[in-house]
Image (cartoon, rainbow, N blue to C red; front, side, top):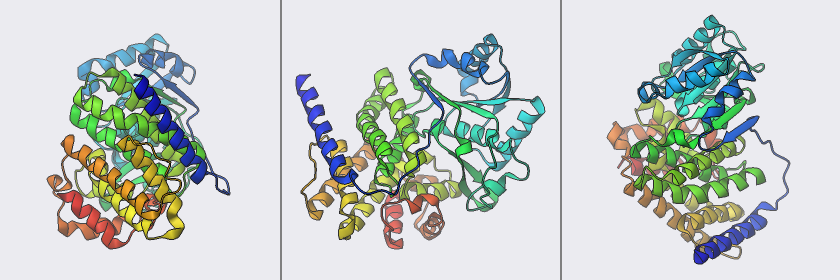
Length: 427
């Protein structure tokens, strides 16, 4: 135990040195976005009624498919709300949300006279609920407010109050200011993005993730790990997101393997919920990178679960970023950041303060190899399993180029580098 404490302390000291070296830079300032209140803790679902009662009297209760009903959790939530004097109108989101589902939810909320939205579910459910709440303040078709496929109009103001209750530990959607929505006419998954999409309250009770099967645990956990890693090396990182990310990565890299091996490890479940929460807070301000830039259009073209796409792409995009940065002398600080993340993944202690590009690249690449091993050990399927072939790579790269996440990638990757990463992920 003492040895572990000593190792943790040395790692913390080394990370602090890295932050001091690469974080003390002249900045023009930054924005940091966060939901108004975060309630975190095992068993705190019981507080949902009091939270809702302070905001309204009639909620649109947005949930997923049948899992909450089968487990009896849906009935429990309704009882919690009813006991607090809050009535609810149910609305189900089956699968990943599209514009039709969101517009149906909005019509349901208006017809029932709902004065708030409560979302209980995974990232898809939370994103749908945030979009429903935000669009209650506007008229006109939803596509007008979508980026890439629509006009990307800004939301004019706040809509219905939204409370998010995640049942998975991956997307961090409970605290993000965007909602990912499928637009089938264009075969794309795109985002609405606005501070008005931030939920008023995020109630994170890790016990709600206890029933996640191993494959969902792995995929959602890799989504969180990817978001943490990409936010740290993003062009838009800042000291607040750095602090969240470094703590989140350290928790996730240990907890993810533990909870995959033992789904009943509640301590690891708690750690993964905290890591996912940190990833959502970080990405709302720092943005993401090429992994998510590719995963968005990929998910619109093929039935690839988002977390799976992130998992199989991350090691290859990580390598591509490291190699590209090593060839640019003016990007040494970002390569140090990649080496810092790799050291945490590998459990090593090194400040990287005086290392040259070749040593930093070597460490970063070993981090990518570690991630590839983690993907393999968890049995996460390759993209080819979902029908992706080499013939699709060109179109995927073309569509990824237009993603907002690509703009915050630490370096502009050449087309061939992106294509090679996707081909490697096809398997």
